[in-house]
View 1: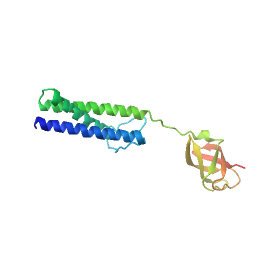
View 2 (view 1 turned 45 degrees about the horizontal axis):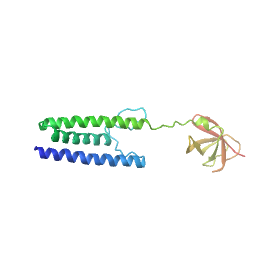
View 3 (view 1 turned 90 degrees about the vertical axis):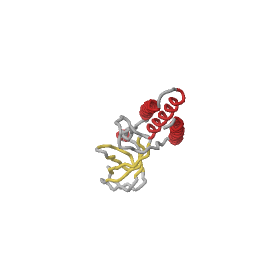
Length: 182
């Protein structure tokens, strides 16, 4: 491989991977959605079981480091091509691990809201389905500032029609016990 071919390889790798990395970052910033393909080799993190060690970000970071590191070695250091490729690979792995570490830190900032359904006792909700006395149905309620549909048991003696107001009187064994609000 000639020096000119190596320069082209490193330059195109660096520019294209940097452009994709910036585009992916803008998509993440603007939408908040992570555009990621899940790979088979996953690491274990405390916050996200889907957090991948080998991700698009880390592969793009490797390509950026490989391209820019190799281009720097070819342009500014008078070393053989084998050493240049070794330097490019080392720089790529450094970028790879820095990107992985930074994404791990960013994802650790995401809050995981744990549901505490016991706090809903005493609050009002709305019957989502009709619930006969002493039978099960569904209620629509706000839990941890999120609208949700949950299983409920009509604790009262009167039937509850769909969309009628109910009061949550008890929570036990993953079941909300409700009564019709009179």
